[in-house]
Image 1 (cartoon, rainbow, N blue to C red):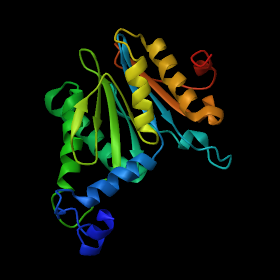
Image 2: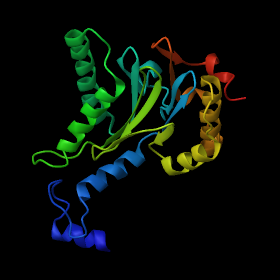
Image 3: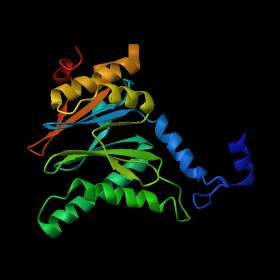
Image 4: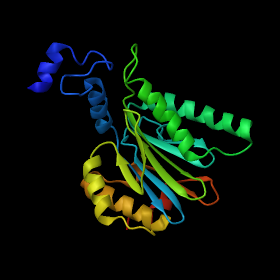
Length: 236
C-alpha cells in the first residue's frame, strides 16, 4: 500500500528523488530486475576462483555458443551478470577498455579491485544524476591478483569482496546454502562440486549440466572454460 502511495505521489519517476521514507524507488525497481535474472554462483578456493552461471536458455533455435554468460575482462579477470544483459554489456565493455588502458599506461596487469571500483562508480552516477535510469544489473567479478578474489557490485554502486556469493534468481536461497556448506580451504574441484550441488537442490527436476556456463581462474592467471563432459564429474 505504501509503495502504491509513493507511485501516486510520483516519487518513482526519477532516480534523483528520495521518497519520504528515504528510499530511491527507481533503485529498488532495478534491484527487483536483478532478482528476475538467471542465477550465478562465485566461489573463492585455495587454488583459484570459480564461477558457475545458469544460462537458462533451452531453446533449440538458439546457438548455444552465443548464449554465454561469463565475460572475459582481462586475462586474469572474468565477470558474470544478473539482470538486464544489455546493461551489463555496456559496463563490461567499459571495464575491458580500462583494463587495456592500464596495461598500456603502466605495463602491468590491473588489480581486480581497480576494475570493480570503476564499474561501481559508473553505477553510482546513474543513481544521482538526471537523464538516465539505474543500471538494472548486478555483476560478480572474479580474478587472480596475488591470490584469488571475488567481488560483487549491486545496482547502487556498492561493492564488497566475498569468499562466496550468488546473484540473480533465488539468490537468497542459494546464499543460505553457501553459508551452510562453504568452508575455507576448498580446492577448485570441491568448489565446483559445491556449486553444482546447490544448483541441483534449487533447480530440482529442471537441473541439467547443459544449461550452465562455467569458468575457473587459477594461479596461471588464465581463464579456463569448462563444458560438456568436463563437468559431469562434478555433479555425481
